[in-house]
Amino acid sequence: MMKKIFLISLLALLLVAGTAGASHSWGKYHWDISTDDSIASPLELGDNLTSLAWDNSLAGGSSDWNLSVLRNQVVAGASNANCDPTSGRVEVCNGEYGNNGWLGVASIWVKRGRSGHIVQGVVMVNDTYFNTSPYDTQAWRNLVMCQEVGHTFGLGHQDEDFSNANLGTCMDYTNDPDGTLFGQLDNQHPNQHDLDMMTEIYAHLNSTDSGSGPGKGNGKGNGGGKGKPSLAGANIDLNDPSSWGQAIKQDAQGNNSLFQRDLENGQVLITHVIWAN
Ligand SMILES: [Zn+2]
Ligand SMILES: [Zn+2]
Image: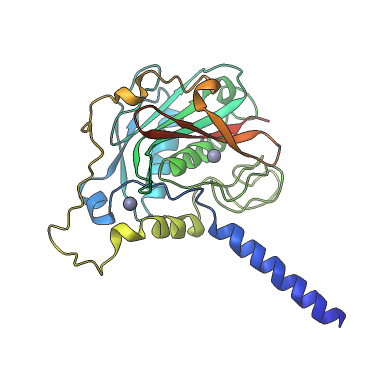
């Protein structure tokens, strides 16, 4: 009898764990880019970074995420000090944004409606913290950069508790980014689960049962054209928390970690925030 109850509890636990794993993407937000399209024309990550340490983090994150179905490439940044977005790509910026509590922010502008298509993305990392202990390490930079870039592809976190064991992915909060402090898994890179989630999120763009072949071209159609600043984001200061909109999720510490704001142009601004602690 006890054994049976134990087995049922175990099964229930496994089911819960399985469900939690599968709901890792927080929405079905994604770029309207198939793998073939992204091989021909990789999603651009604009490098507006001002230090070699950050350049290295972005280069590492870029090549890590290139194991996924969505190919990317680092290109020269097209942004400004405000880290304004550019339609059709991701802009990545660093700066001393102040003692405002956040280590990193990743925002995506998504078309309102069912498509969930991402129009543009921005990553900002806060040197006010990364210039000081404990964050002034390559491992911390790698963790946060990898995570924020993952958000701009449509991924959520796998875990939001800083003090539990590392899952071995940059999409997991930690106080020990490379795992050397407590002898645990390295959280500087995506893991297979992240890559699997990417495959799932982008599956409909890569399906072969819809008469694919040459000329499938689903046209990126995000309007605005590449390289032109988007008016939609030009007056949004992501360093100002009030511009993030409404909090829709909290991390394990009870801090708001996900925000949503409806914009007048028919887009929705989604912002992930990782806090210093
Ligand atoms: Zn789609
Ligand atoms: Zn995050």
